[in-house]
Image (cartoon, rainbow, N blue to C red; front, side):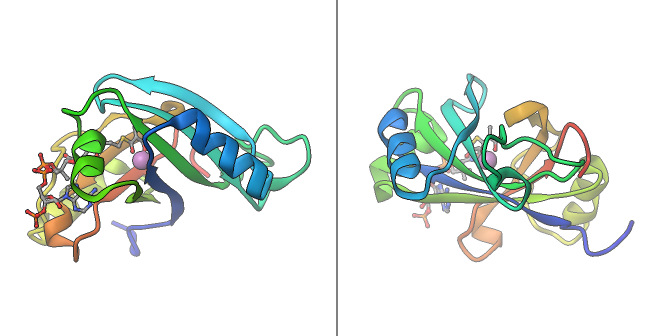
Length: 157
Ligand code: V0V
Ligand code: CO
């Protein structure tokens, strides 16, 4: 295992009640473009990834990869129903930062290493994430109240 385990900041997940309005706000305020828009039934969300440089910020860029470099993203998350992680979060705390996602080189290896430290895994095995990534969540109560996501991109940066 190569340390550090976390290779880059991949995304900040932000819970919102209305995805279209949130996307419009980020576009109007910061000029960010939507790199992907997906429904993830397993996670109970409709979500948009908006690329934030360096590669994703270029004019006309689709915000995915430029020269093999994956940008960071803002991930806007709208719950599919109240009875989902993001739906429950909004009911309890309102809109706001929901989780932080970090890049890892090998998610299965990373999960095994983290489990060995005693941090609780919310996912024992990787799940399907945005833009074809493999993702897994770590318990916020064991990480200072921060829901933490490990992300192995479809194509490694
Ligand atoms: C809940 N809690 C959080 C939290 N959500 N703390 C920090 N950050 C969050 N996002 C706290 C909450 O304040 C309570 O603390 C406690 O957890 C129990 O709350 P709950 O409402 O009863 O919630 P649970 O226990 O049913 O579920 C909470 C967890 C759940 C974190 C276990 O949300 C989960 O499994 N999340 C992982 C999946 C996920 O979030 N998917 C959506 C993003 P107190 O009051 O007891 O202290 S999908 C995504 O990011 C994708 C697809 C992607 O990036 O590609
Ligand atoms: Co996420």
